[in-house]
Amino acid sequence: MNITVVVLHYENIKDTRECLDSLKKYLDDTKNNINIVVVDNGSIKEKTAAIEKEYLNDKIHFIESGENLGFAKGNNIGFHYAKYELHSDIIILANNDLIFQQVDFMDQIEKEMTENHIDVAGPRIISLVDHKNQNPVPYVHPDLASVKKRIFKLQVLRMMCYFGVDKFFQSIFSKKYSADVKSDNYQLHGACLIMANNYVKNYDGLYPKTFMYMEEDILKYITKRDHLVMKYFDSAEVFHKEGSSTGKIYGAGRKKRSFYYKWNIDGCKKLRQLMESGRDK
Image (cartoon, rainbow, N blue to C red):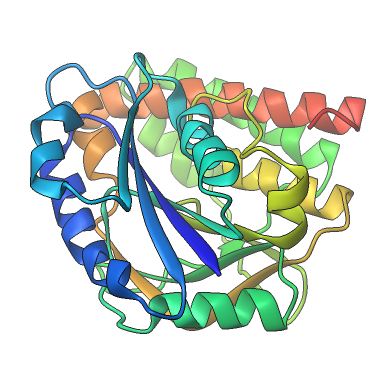
């Protein structure tokens, strides 16, 4: 079985190096053919070129996008290479702030995806901040009305952010949701997405029209629309440092919140367009 891990890098060499170091053990797998594709998504200060010589291996491939294409299109460069150049059966899209410790991770992935005929999956994602499992995620945008409502809320919060009072309004707008793995009422965390079978066969990556945020929601919509099998399983596990790249580049506080609102609104509008048009992949 050909399995490729796509690691998306942007301006954080430390995280990417630690992620790659945790992945190297899988390259000696005798059962599956494991490859790693590292996509430098337009880094300016901390390019992957600085560490390529540390990872000279026929199974580790470095690609540069030339510009910051955002989460979806950056990942899609690696997905395309994994699909068409490496002829991968299973493609794992991984944040560079993940650590892979589970020795039989690839065996579990191969078993779950093959035996259960899964098209899109997600493993346990354990936060290194609070040690909680981040997967799966509540499914909160099942219809057009819910998406329109979120756009309105985000627009209000973005406006309030200019005055520094958006946190107060967040508490007013906040609503707790739960993910139910026994039903279809969940979606997958974007830090580690596993694609195989019909998804790899029929798609060339994530929906490409977002820059950052809402990719998971759109992926959930597409899997439901196209009758694909999406599953969460806890037989495989990764560890997540949580957002260290965005924190490093876009800062904290009001600046980071403004960035979040801007691109969340954009992503919501893309999902709204998909729901209204129906067939755009």
